[in-house]
Each structure stands twice: as C-alpha cells, then as structure tokens.
Figure 1 (cartoon, rainbow, N blue to C red):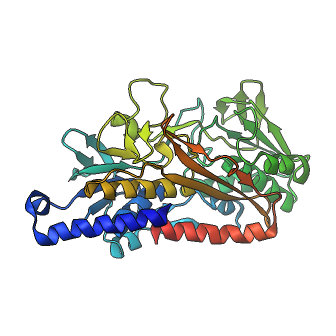
Figure 2: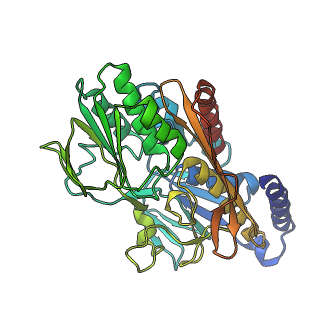
Length: 418
C-alpha cells in the first residue's frame, strides 16, 4: 500500500512546494500548514516523522514531556534481566535533527478545538491546523491497588524495574499472581507472554512455586494455541491459568487479591487494570457523552475524530477495531500522515487503507513465537477489519524466532524514531 501512497504523496508534496515557489494567490501567501502532535510513543513519533518526510513544507510540533520513549516492546525481557533499559529507551534526537520536527518538552494540558490551540503545562500555546492525539492509554482504578506499590508496568519505564523487583522478591515456592484485563487493552499477547517469562524465570532460579494468571476474558485473546500449549506443557504445574477471573480489589497489607470467584494470597503480584483512551482524549470531548465509551470513534481513512473536526486520534486511544500495539500504532500513523499530506494538497484520503500488525512473544529465555494479521477498511461498518486468512501465529516457539524478534524490534524502533 505505502509504495503507491508514497508516489502520490511525493507528487502532492511537489505540487505544494511549487505553489509556494510561484507565489500563487492565497495558498502561497498563507503560513505553512501546522500540525501539532501530542504524545511521543510509536504513533506520535511515526506520524511526526512521516508528515515531515513526505512534505517538509508542513510544520510539525511534537509535545512530549519525557526526553525519551521507553518501549513496552521487549520490556518483559527487562523484567527478567535478559535485557537492559537502554535496549528499550528511544530518543527523539533524529526526529528533531534529521526531519525538522519541533520537539516541545512539555505536557499538553488543554485543547481549544474552536480556536485550534493546544496549551501546555508551562503556559505555551501552540496553534494548529490539524491536531493529532496519541496519548496512549489510561487506567481504571481498582480498589486498594497502588501502582507505586504493585506496579502494573503496562507503561514501560520505572515501573518495569519495579516489576523486576517484584519478581526478584518471590521466595522459593512462592506465589506470583498476575491479572489480565478485559479486552481491548494494550498489546493483546503481552500479559500471556509476561506470565510465561515469570514462570520461566522462577524455574531457572530454582524458586518455582505458582504463577496464577487471572484472566478477565473467557479465554486467551491472542495466540491461543501458543499460550495454551505453554501453560499446559512447558509450564505445567507452575502456571495456573484461570479464565473469567476479574480482580475486584487488592489488599496489599494482607497480600490478598479479591476476584469475582475467590480471595487469593500472593507473595508478589502484577495487577494490570482495565484500560481506556488517554485522559486528554476524553477532556477534548472525543469520546462523546456516553460514559461507557472507552475509545475515540474516528474515521479510519484519516483517523479524524467523528465528533470534533481537525482532531485526529491514533495509537491505543483510537477505536477502529484494530489491536492496540506498537506495530499497529506505527501503521496507523502512516495512514494518518498520508491523509494529512493529502489534505494540505487539497486531496481526499486514500479510500482503501490497509494496516498490518506483527509481534513476537518470548515464551522462554531462548524461544519466541510470533503473530501477524492484516486489516482493511470496511466501508459498510466504517471500521478496519481483519482480512480473511491473514491472522496467523507461529506453529511453535523456536530459537530462530527469538533471534528474529530483536531484528523486528530494531526495525520498528528505527522506523518510528530513527
């Protein structure tokens, strides 16, 4: 898809540049188009990069308070000690120096969608012609759960190291309890991968007791063959998988978790709360008036909000039927960048966008599995739907897949941030 898009985008970019050089009427004399991006994860970094790459006439500002992005991809390997934080820490230097993205080191705190202005915590006001929100996820509160004490580590960074400390604290024969929220949530295979690596680490350290997996879903939601096989064979007697088990509250002092079925004692725990679109998306009115709406309704042809014009939502916060993952965020960002470049060239978005998602899941310290799926726009539903026969998972975890995983991650990191 993107080879055809790129050809059209370069033509559009050239046309826009020509208008400016010829000084033609109103378009030539107007200020350069302004795109403001909020959030510097895979979605935000990629859209900022590709808008500039495909049309350097467009001014792009990326608002992000952190000096670098810490990737959830490969973060479970940091938990086990197989990788360091430097492996998953991605800086914005190339976006600034190579592509000319204006990096605003601040936090967006307000959006005026009428005047088209974003306000940051230090009072800076950034006007925009198009706004792209990529704030990631927010979490529901669980009574008794304090992420500073029991880290969910579903946003990589300091919590990743805190989760590693939880794993390191498990005594011989102890119990580690982890939970999986109801789908959709960020990275569908991620919690199951984490359960496998917890069990693998405890086995290798000769401390294996139990890893109890409380899944709020009725079954494994991603790579079911791979993870059921791992739970029932590779980690038989260690992983205790309990579907339809929802965490209701946490008693840290008593080291107990209350579920809809029972109360479970733990030595260490990793409770991953239910998720929703980032706070800024809700604050901007992009979820509508129904409090049950968790994800922003957008048009997948451009990712423009269906509720507020000139505001686009990509990555984990969007609600288009696509999985929430770094690879998918990267793909959505390119579709959005394509649509923005076309918009400023006076063109319509691609009427038939396609995206793909791929990921590798380490199953042991030396083997990994993989999952792929392709999505296409469905004009009837207005959503992105999986293309038949494209959903696939590896027949079995292998050492070769484990080695390929690092190449896949490096390529994705470079495509978004390099």
